[in-house]
Length: 426
Image 1 (cartoon, rainbow, N blue to C red):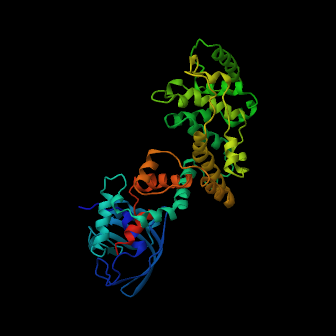
Image 2 (image 1 turned 90 degrees about the vertical axis):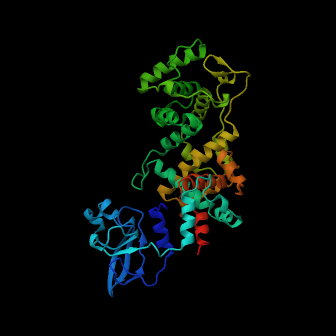
Protein backbone atom coordinates (compact mmCIF):
# COMPACT_ATOMS: atom_id res chain seq x y z
CA UNK A 1 0.00 0.00 0.00
CA UNK A 2 1.40 3.41 -0.99
CA UNK A 3 1.99 5.81 1.89
CA UNK A 4 0.72 9.28 1.07
CA UNK A 5 1.63 12.56 2.74
CA UNK A 6 -0.31 15.79 2.66
CA UNK A 7 2.46 17.48 0.67
CA UNK A 8 1.35 15.39 -2.33
CA UNK A 9 -2.17 16.75 -1.98
CA UNK A 10 -0.83 20.31 -1.83
CA UNK A 11 1.25 19.69 -4.96
CA UNK A 12 -1.70 18.18 -6.84
CA UNK A 13 -3.90 21.10 -5.84
CA UNK A 14 -1.37 23.83 -6.64
CA UNK A 15 -0.48 22.34 -10.03
CA UNK A 16 -4.04 21.26 -10.91
CA UNK A 17 -2.73 17.77 -11.54
CA UNK A 18 -6.08 16.01 -11.28
CA UNK A 19 -9.13 15.66 -13.49
CA UNK A 20 -11.31 18.75 -13.17
CA UNK A 21 -14.21 17.48 -15.25
CA UNK A 22 -17.43 16.01 -13.86
CA UNK A 23 -16.57 16.70 -10.25
CA UNK A 24 -18.93 15.79 -7.43
CA UNK A 25 -18.70 15.85 -3.67
CA UNK A 26 -18.86 12.50 -1.90
CA UNK A 27 -22.52 13.36 -1.23
CA UNK A 28 -23.15 13.42 -4.99
CA UNK A 29 -23.46 17.19 -5.36
CA UNK A 30 -22.10 18.85 -8.52
CA UNK A 31 -18.89 20.73 -7.76
CA UNK A 32 -16.99 23.45 -9.64
CA UNK A 33 -13.82 25.07 -8.34
CA UNK A 34 -13.69 28.75 -9.30
CA UNK A 35 -10.67 29.68 -7.12
CA UNK A 36 -8.24 27.20 -5.61
CA UNK A 37 -7.26 29.67 -2.89
CA UNK A 38 -3.86 30.81 -1.64
CA UNK A 39 -1.51 28.45 0.20
CA UNK A 40 -1.45 29.20 3.91
CA UNK A 41 1.98 28.59 5.47
CA UNK A 42 0.82 29.48 8.98
CA UNK A 43 -1.61 27.74 11.31
CA UNK A 44 -5.18 27.26 10.16
CA UNK A 45 -6.70 25.90 6.92
CA UNK A 46 -4.28 24.85 4.16
CA UNK A 47 -5.70 27.22 1.51
CA UNK A 48 -7.35 30.57 2.11
CA UNK A 49 -9.94 32.52 0.12
CA UNK A 50 -11.20 29.72 -2.07
CA UNK A 51 -14.36 29.91 -4.15
CA UNK A 52 -16.47 26.91 -5.16
CA UNK A 53 -19.88 26.33 -6.67
CA UNK A 54 -21.87 23.43 -5.22
CA UNK A 55 -25.27 22.65 -6.76
CA UNK A 56 -25.38 26.17 -8.31
CA UNK A 57 -24.67 27.84 -4.94
CA UNK A 58 -21.47 29.89 -4.56
CA UNK A 59 -19.39 29.33 -1.42
CA UNK A 60 -16.45 31.59 -0.52
CA UNK A 61 -14.12 30.47 2.25
CA UNK A 62 -11.16 28.29 3.09
CA UNK A 63 -10.10 24.83 1.91
CA UNK A 64 -8.61 22.13 4.15
CA UNK A 65 -6.76 19.01 3.02
CA UNK A 66 -6.14 15.61 4.59
CA UNK A 67 -5.08 12.20 3.41
CA UNK A 68 -8.14 10.70 5.12
CA UNK A 69 -11.44 12.42 5.82
CA UNK A 70 -11.30 11.11 9.40
CA UNK A 71 -8.22 13.28 9.99
CA UNK A 72 -10.62 16.22 10.40
CA UNK A 73 -11.80 14.93 13.76
CA UNK A 74 -8.43 13.39 14.57
CA UNK A 75 -6.92 16.89 14.37
CA UNK A 76 -9.89 18.34 16.30
CA UNK A 77 -10.71 20.90 13.63
CA UNK A 78 -14.40 20.84 14.55
CA UNK A 79 -13.40 22.39 17.89
CA UNK A 80 -11.16 25.04 16.34
CA UNK A 81 -12.66 28.41 15.40
CA UNK A 82 -9.98 28.85 12.72
CA UNK A 83 -11.68 26.11 10.69
CA UNK A 84 -15.25 27.39 10.94
CA UNK A 85 -15.09 29.01 7.50
CA UNK A 86 -13.94 25.90 5.59
CA UNK A 87 -16.19 25.42 2.53
CA UNK A 88 -14.47 22.35 1.04
CA UNK A 89 -12.63 19.41 2.59
CA UNK A 90 -10.27 17.88 0.01
CA UNK A 91 -9.08 14.36 0.85
CA UNK A 92 -7.31 11.52 -0.83
CA UNK A 93 -9.83 9.03 0.51
CA UNK A 94 -13.14 9.52 2.25
CA UNK A 95 -13.09 6.91 5.01
CA UNK A 96 -16.00 8.52 6.90
CA UNK A 97 -18.86 8.69 4.43
CA UNK A 98 -21.67 11.16 3.93
CA UNK A 99 -23.15 10.65 7.39
CA UNK A 100 -19.89 11.56 9.12
CA UNK A 101 -19.27 14.96 7.51
CA UNK A 102 -21.10 18.27 7.59
CA UNK A 103 -18.60 19.93 5.22
CA UNK A 104 -18.59 19.10 1.47
CA UNK A 105 -15.85 16.57 0.70
CA UNK A 106 -13.94 16.14 -2.57
CA UNK A 107 -12.12 12.80 -2.91
CA UNK A 108 -9.05 12.93 -5.17
CA UNK A 109 -8.46 9.20 -5.31
CA UNK A 110 -9.15 8.02 -8.83
CA UNK A 111 -8.71 11.50 -10.33
CA UNK A 112 -4.87 11.62 -10.33
CA UNK A 113 -2.51 10.41 -13.06
CA UNK A 114 -1.23 6.88 -12.31
CA UNK A 115 2.32 7.60 -13.56
CA UNK A 116 2.71 10.52 -11.17
CA UNK A 117 1.61 8.34 -8.27
CA UNK A 118 4.06 5.64 -9.30
CA UNK A 119 6.92 8.17 -9.37
CA UNK A 120 5.86 9.55 -5.99
CA UNK A 121 5.74 6.07 -4.46
CA UNK A 122 9.20 5.27 -5.86
CA UNK A 123 10.76 8.43 -4.45
CA UNK A 124 9.10 8.18 -1.05
CA UNK A 125 10.05 4.53 -0.68
CA UNK A 126 13.59 4.94 -2.00
CA UNK A 127 16.59 4.04 0.16
CA UNK A 128 19.04 5.47 -2.37
CA UNK A 129 21.48 8.19 -1.29
CA UNK A 130 19.58 10.48 -3.64
CA UNK A 131 15.97 9.30 -4.06
CA UNK A 132 15.84 10.44 -7.69
CA UNK A 133 19.34 9.23 -8.62
CA UNK A 134 18.33 6.93 -11.55
CA UNK A 135 16.29 9.78 -13.05
CA UNK A 136 19.02 12.43 -13.03
CA UNK A 137 19.91 13.83 -16.43
CA UNK A 138 21.42 16.97 -17.91
CA UNK A 139 18.15 18.90 -17.68
CA UNK A 140 17.67 17.90 -14.04
CA UNK A 141 21.16 19.15 -13.16
CA UNK A 142 20.45 22.37 -15.07
CA UNK A 143 17.39 22.90 -12.88
CA UNK A 144 19.68 22.74 -9.85
CA UNK A 145 22.06 25.30 -11.35
CA UNK A 146 19.19 27.70 -12.02
CA UNK A 147 17.98 27.28 -8.44
CA UNK A 148 21.35 27.63 -6.68
CA UNK A 149 20.70 31.15 -5.37
CA UNK A 150 17.25 30.15 -4.10
CA UNK A 151 18.67 27.08 -2.34
CA UNK A 152 21.37 29.11 -0.60
CA UNK A 153 18.76 31.66 0.41
CA UNK A 154 16.78 28.77 1.96
CA UNK A 155 19.92 27.66 3.78
CA UNK A 156 20.58 31.11 5.20
CA UNK A 157 16.92 31.61 6.07
CA UNK A 158 17.15 28.41 8.14
CA UNK A 159 20.03 29.99 10.03
CA UNK A 160 17.77 32.99 10.70
CA UNK A 161 15.33 30.75 12.56
CA UNK A 162 18.11 28.94 14.40
CA UNK A 163 19.28 32.25 15.79
CA UNK A 164 15.70 32.66 17.10
CA UNK A 165 15.37 36.03 15.43
CA UNK A 166 11.97 37.54 14.68
CA UNK A 167 10.97 40.79 13.03
CA UNK A 168 10.14 42.15 16.48
CA UNK A 169 13.63 41.44 17.85
CA UNK A 170 15.63 43.99 15.89
CA UNK A 171 17.69 45.19 18.82
CA UNK A 172 19.34 41.85 19.51
CA UNK A 173 23.05 41.75 20.31
CA UNK A 174 24.33 41.03 16.82
CA UNK A 175 27.98 41.02 17.84
CA UNK A 176 27.20 38.38 20.46
CA UNK A 177 25.37 36.34 17.81
CA UNK A 178 28.42 36.62 15.56
CA UNK A 179 30.72 35.58 18.42
CA UNK A 180 28.56 32.54 19.10
CA UNK A 181 28.75 31.37 15.49
CA UNK A 182 32.47 32.01 15.21
CA UNK A 183 33.09 29.95 18.34
CA UNK A 184 30.85 27.17 17.10
CA UNK A 185 32.56 26.74 13.74
CA UNK A 186 36.10 27.51 14.84
CA UNK A 187 35.97 24.78 17.49
CA UNK A 188 34.85 22.22 14.90
CA UNK A 189 31.98 19.80 14.54
CA UNK A 190 32.98 17.65 17.53
CA UNK A 191 33.10 20.64 19.89
CA UNK A 192 30.51 22.92 18.30
CA UNK A 193 28.17 22.85 21.28
CA UNK A 194 31.05 23.61 23.64
CA UNK A 195 31.99 26.51 21.39
CA UNK A 196 28.52 28.00 21.72
CA UNK A 197 28.57 27.56 25.49
CA UNK A 198 31.96 29.27 25.67
CA UNK A 199 30.58 32.27 23.75
CA UNK A 200 27.64 32.50 26.13
CA UNK A 201 29.93 32.50 29.18
CA UNK A 202 32.40 34.93 27.62
CA UNK A 203 30.19 37.78 26.39
CA UNK A 204 31.43 40.37 23.92
CA UNK A 205 31.33 43.05 26.62
CA UNK A 206 34.12 41.27 28.52
CA UNK A 207 36.07 40.64 25.31
CA UNK A 208 35.93 44.34 24.41
CA UNK A 209 37.42 45.37 27.74
CA UNK A 210 40.39 43.01 27.44
CA UNK A 211 41.04 42.79 23.70
CA UNK A 212 44.29 44.76 23.78
CA UNK A 213 46.24 41.88 25.37
CA UNK A 214 46.66 38.46 23.73
CA UNK A 215 47.80 36.95 27.04
CA UNK A 216 44.74 38.25 28.89
CA UNK A 217 42.49 36.99 26.11
CA UNK A 218 44.09 33.54 26.28
CA UNK A 219 43.51 33.52 30.05
CA UNK A 220 39.83 34.34 29.50
CA UNK A 221 39.27 31.83 26.69
CA UNK A 222 41.11 28.93 28.31
CA UNK A 223 39.75 29.81 31.74
CA UNK A 224 36.11 29.91 30.63
CA UNK A 225 36.66 26.67 28.68
CA UNK A 226 37.76 24.95 31.89
CA UNK A 227 41.36 24.32 30.80
CA UNK A 228 42.83 26.16 33.77
CA UNK A 229 41.10 24.07 36.42
CA UNK A 230 43.64 21.23 36.18
CA UNK A 231 47.03 21.12 37.88
CA UNK A 232 49.71 21.08 35.17
CA UNK A 233 53.48 21.24 35.63
CA UNK A 234 53.96 24.10 33.18
CA UNK A 235 55.09 27.68 33.86
CA UNK A 236 52.83 29.23 31.19
CA UNK A 237 49.83 27.36 32.59
CA UNK A 238 50.70 28.60 36.11
CA UNK A 239 50.89 32.21 34.90
CA UNK A 240 47.53 31.93 33.15
CA UNK A 241 45.90 30.36 36.20
CA UNK A 242 47.07 33.25 38.37
CA UNK A 243 45.72 35.86 35.93
CA UNK A 244 42.43 34.05 35.39
CA UNK A 245 41.82 33.81 39.13
CA UNK A 246 41.65 37.60 39.18
CA UNK A 247 39.53 37.82 35.98
CA UNK A 248 37.15 35.12 37.20
CA UNK A 249 36.45 37.06 40.39
CA UNK A 250 36.23 40.41 38.60
CA UNK A 251 33.64 39.31 36.01
CA UNK A 252 31.87 36.55 37.92
CA UNK A 253 32.84 33.96 35.31
CA UNK A 254 31.55 30.39 35.57
CA UNK A 255 34.08 28.06 33.90
CA UNK A 256 32.89 25.12 31.83
CA UNK A 257 33.75 21.54 32.70
CA UNK A 258 36.78 20.50 30.68
CA UNK A 259 35.46 16.94 30.48
CA UNK A 260 32.86 18.15 27.95
CA UNK A 261 35.54 18.83 25.33
CA UNK A 262 36.29 16.04 22.88
CA UNK A 263 39.93 15.29 22.05
CA UNK A 264 40.03 11.82 20.52
CA UNK A 265 40.29 11.05 16.82
CA UNK A 266 41.38 14.56 15.84
CA UNK A 267 44.33 15.84 13.86
CA UNK A 268 46.75 17.95 15.89
CA UNK A 269 45.59 21.15 14.15
CA UNK A 270 42.02 20.53 15.27
CA UNK A 271 42.69 19.80 18.93
CA UNK A 272 40.65 21.97 21.32
CA UNK A 273 43.68 23.70 22.85
CA UNK A 274 44.96 24.82 19.42
CA UNK A 275 41.53 26.04 18.33
CA UNK A 276 41.06 27.89 21.63
CA UNK A 277 44.45 29.57 21.16
CA UNK A 278 43.37 30.64 17.66
CA UNK A 279 40.09 31.93 19.04
CA UNK A 280 41.95 34.02 21.61
CA UNK A 281 44.12 35.42 18.81
CA UNK A 282 41.04 36.39 16.79
CA UNK A 283 39.29 37.98 19.75
CA UNK A 284 42.38 39.93 20.77
CA UNK A 285 42.16 41.73 17.41
CA UNK A 286 38.70 43.03 18.31
CA UNK A 287 35.15 41.88 18.90
CA UNK A 288 33.20 43.94 16.36
CA UNK A 289 33.21 41.32 13.62
CA UNK A 290 29.73 42.19 12.37
CA UNK A 291 30.64 45.84 11.86
CA UNK A 292 33.83 44.83 10.06
CA UNK A 293 31.93 42.36 7.85
CA UNK A 294 29.30 44.99 6.97
CA UNK A 295 32.05 47.30 5.73
CA UNK A 296 33.93 44.61 3.79
CA UNK A 297 34.16 45.47 0.10
CA UNK A 298 35.44 42.07 -0.96
CA UNK A 299 36.22 38.58 0.26
CA UNK A 300 39.83 39.71 0.62
CA UNK A 301 38.70 42.06 3.39
CA UNK A 302 37.07 39.12 5.17
CA UNK A 303 40.30 37.13 4.88
CA UNK A 304 42.18 39.97 6.54
CA UNK A 305 39.55 39.95 9.28
CA UNK A 306 40.28 36.26 9.93
CA UNK A 307 44.06 36.68 9.89
CA UNK A 308 45.45 35.72 13.32
CA UNK A 309 48.41 33.90 14.82
CA UNK A 310 48.66 32.33 18.24
CA UNK A 311 51.11 33.31 20.96
CA UNK A 312 54.64 31.85 20.79
CA UNK A 313 53.80 29.20 23.43
CA UNK A 314 51.55 27.38 20.99
CA UNK A 315 54.22 27.24 18.30
CA UNK A 316 55.71 24.20 20.03
CA UNK A 317 52.78 22.97 22.18
CA UNK A 318 49.48 21.30 21.30
CA UNK A 319 48.21 21.35 24.90
CA UNK A 320 49.46 22.63 28.21
CA UNK A 321 52.71 20.91 29.09
CA UNK A 322 52.64 18.82 25.88
CA UNK A 323 55.24 19.57 23.20
CA UNK A 324 54.39 19.41 19.50
CA UNK A 325 56.43 17.21 17.18
CA UNK A 326 57.76 20.33 15.44
CA UNK A 327 57.69 24.04 16.11
CA UNK A 328 55.58 26.26 13.83
CA UNK A 329 53.21 29.21 14.01
CA UNK A 330 49.67 27.87 14.22
CA UNK A 331 47.84 30.50 12.21
CA UNK A 332 44.25 30.29 11.08
CA UNK A 333 44.61 28.46 7.77
CA UNK A 334 42.97 29.56 4.52
CA UNK A 335 40.70 26.52 4.62
CA UNK A 336 39.59 27.39 8.15
CA UNK A 337 39.06 31.02 7.15
CA UNK A 338 36.77 29.85 4.34
CA UNK A 339 34.82 27.69 6.76
CA UNK A 340 34.36 30.57 9.20
CA UNK A 341 33.34 33.02 6.48
CA UNK A 342 30.87 30.59 4.88
CA UNK A 343 29.32 29.14 8.03
CA UNK A 344 29.58 31.95 10.58
CA UNK A 345 30.22 35.42 9.18
CA UNK A 346 28.03 35.41 6.07
CA UNK A 347 24.99 33.69 7.66
CA UNK A 348 24.92 36.15 10.57
CA UNK A 349 25.50 39.08 8.21
CA UNK A 350 22.70 37.79 5.98
CA UNK A 351 20.39 37.42 8.98
CA UNK A 352 21.18 40.96 10.06
CA UNK A 353 20.46 42.27 6.55
CA UNK A 354 17.25 40.23 6.41
CA UNK A 355 15.92 41.51 9.74
CA UNK A 356 16.92 45.14 9.16
CA UNK A 357 15.66 45.19 5.58
CA UNK A 358 19.02 45.90 3.91
CA UNK A 359 18.56 44.19 0.56
CA UNK A 360 21.90 45.32 -0.91
CA UNK A 361 23.77 43.83 2.05
CA UNK A 362 21.79 40.59 1.75
CA UNK A 363 22.72 40.27 -1.92
CA UNK A 364 26.36 41.07 -1.10
CA UNK A 365 26.47 38.05 1.21
CA UNK A 366 25.40 35.78 -1.63
CA UNK A 367 27.80 37.43 -4.06
CA UNK A 368 30.70 36.88 -1.65
CA UNK A 369 30.03 33.15 -1.85
CA UNK A 370 30.75 33.20 -5.59
CA UNK A 371 34.24 34.51 -4.77
CA UNK A 372 35.03 31.67 -2.37
CA UNK A 373 36.45 28.31 -3.41
CA UNK A 374 34.50 25.07 -3.68
CA UNK A 375 34.14 23.50 -0.25
CA UNK A 376 35.55 20.08 0.51
CA UNK A 377 33.11 17.65 2.08
CA UNK A 378 31.96 14.07 1.61
CA UNK A 379 28.50 15.27 0.57
CA UNK A 380 29.85 17.62 -2.07
CA UNK A 381 32.15 14.92 -3.44
CA UNK A 382 29.25 12.47 -3.79
CA UNK A 383 27.07 15.09 -5.47
CA UNK A 384 29.80 15.88 -7.99
CA UNK A 385 30.21 12.17 -8.72
CA UNK A 386 26.51 12.10 -9.66
CA UNK A 387 26.87 14.76 -12.32
CA UNK A 388 26.37 18.00 -10.42
CA UNK A 389 28.75 20.89 -10.97
CA UNK A 390 30.28 23.33 -8.50
CA UNK A 391 32.38 26.34 -9.47
CA UNK A 392 32.44 28.17 -6.14
CA UNK A 393 31.14 28.11 -2.57
CA UNK A 394 27.66 29.27 -3.52
CA UNK A 395 27.28 26.08 -5.58
CA UNK A 396 28.55 23.85 -2.78
CA UNK A 397 26.27 25.54 -0.24
CA UNK A 398 23.37 24.96 -2.64
CA UNK A 399 24.34 21.29 -2.99
CA UNK A 400 24.47 20.88 0.78
CA UNK A 401 21.04 22.47 1.14
CA UNK A 402 19.63 20.32 -1.65
CA UNK A 403 20.86 17.15 0.06
CA UNK A 404 20.03 18.05 3.66
CA UNK A 405 16.96 20.21 3.17
CA UNK A 406 15.26 18.26 0.40
CA UNK A 407 16.70 14.82 -0.42
CA UNK A 408 17.19 13.63 3.15
CA UNK A 409 13.70 14.81 4.12
CA UNK A 410 12.07 13.47 0.95
CA UNK A 411 10.79 16.93 0.06
CA UNK A 412 10.85 15.93 -3.60
CA UNK A 413 7.70 17.84 -4.47
CA UNK A 414 9.25 21.11 -3.27
CA UNK A 415 12.64 20.46 -4.88
CA UNK A 416 13.54 22.16 -8.19
CA UNK A 417 14.64 18.81 -9.61
CA UNK A 418 11.61 17.01 -8.24
CA UNK A 419 9.29 19.63 -9.73
CA UNK A 420 10.92 19.02 -13.11
CA UNK A 421 10.60 15.25 -12.78
CA UNK A 422 6.94 15.42 -11.77
CA UNK A 423 6.33 17.93 -14.55
CA UNK A 424 7.36 15.24 -17.02
CA UNK A 425 4.72 12.79 -15.86
CA UNK A 426 1.84 14.52 -17.61
